[in-house]
Image (cartoon, helix red, strand yellow):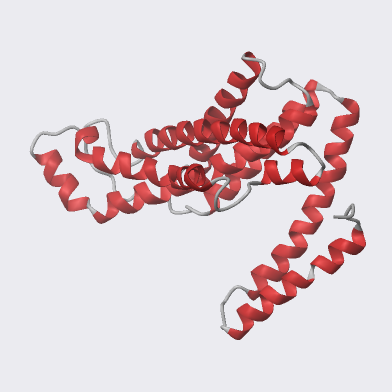
Length: 253
């Protein structure tokens, strides 16, 4: 494979044309999103490429932390956009993503599995934050949907003397598991159904396949930890939006 340049990128855009053609044929209402999304992705990635190169050259801890803060804030905003009907969804997403991502990255740094270099922290943090973002959005949406759909059962349990946690415990677990489905499926099929991004990138760059595998295992374990912590924290923060301190269900939230 040749080193990709602007010409190769423009030629690869034929994939976008094919996707739009298929969507148009089947009359899928996503053509504008596909077109604008493709252009937006191009602009964002090119901009990020130059920004990351600058950070790599400067190698400033403050710039690294600023980059992580921006990534988490933008990710939380995107996740909250999927669950607009939940009050305070942005703060829930941001807090759960921060806790899940920072605990994971801090653990890796403490055990010196990775070093605090921009070249390592930013790409790995991007994968961790991206998965945490999806997990938080899925958890909030699933939990809110289950609580609203099972309002009568929950209120009956509360009337019988159960606490809000006991009355909604089943929905906690279901919501948390929903946030973890993607990473659980990934762990089941990685290396068999698909070769994931980190491994593929290293192999394309000429690295030894075994080294690429070992890195991918580390990344997979990081994603598992971050997604699990994020899902649990998102559940705990979201569930409190639906109950008062007197164990009353507030479904209008």
